[in-house]
Image (tube, rainbow, N blue to C red; front, side):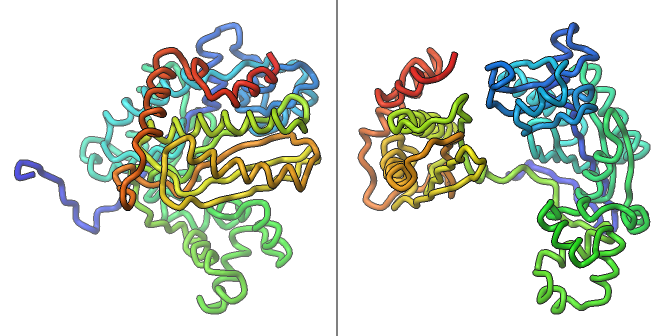
Length: 409
């Protein structure tokens, strides 16, 4: 591209990274669109079956969070914690549209954006800081634009890197604006729990606690007393990243999110299901939907995983790899069906949840050796066209119809 130009910045120019995070996104959109919900404990999601429903919470407003309600919580638990909560059916099409609007707003400030979910993104503003007094000034301008154009609040964290920018936005939520620079990070991080570090979840935190390492200062002292070889031997290679994070260091670039690692669909049943024909129809419908999404994204999968959860909340998975990457519904179903049949023959009891995930994704640009039968592709393309015009429920394989007959209204 002979007419393309780029701005080359000296390596000594400090980076300015921002993390923009929408506040209680789904619930805030519902409160925005329905003034009667403002100020009330709004809970998005749920199974819509009353007090005994088996659904899960997608999101909760800050009013609901005061009662301990949070996302991914079973609806029954949310109802017990917040009996006055207002349950609202999620509208993913609306949330996706608002997310697209947010992206358009952010691109007016910098083209270097990495969306990490539907409601948050990193921005690398290093190349545009000549137009702004400071990172905080830029963050304030972004907040004003989001509020003006979307009538929603967001929190913006500012730093030299992604780790600290994300931490800053977490610290200043909701509707906040804060800065945490690398030079100040060691002192600021020291008294914080180790869970502020990337990769330190509940299991890792429990493991560290058994070593009496509960704060970042504790962990840093332990790491400083050992060389890399000792750290790897005693705690694993991941602890080397923690060494740098304890100092507030992170050199990961801001870039477009990598291709999706998987495409999945799962369903929590209103009542535990043991009938093989219902489970089979459910999985077939999930294969239809996930392969349709696969084709829409221009991807093929090489593997699939069946997720199964029993009434006692134990979760199991069964996986299979395909001989060649595919986006064809029939071929994926041919791999999923025996996984399900084997499970049912060995575990005839009921299931609380069942799901399908397609993984090891690759671009459809790769051609299979000796080619492939074009007929299945034409059938899928025709089905996709009908679904796009009349809705995804307008056409489905006969075996999947049983799923809808058994779905609670």
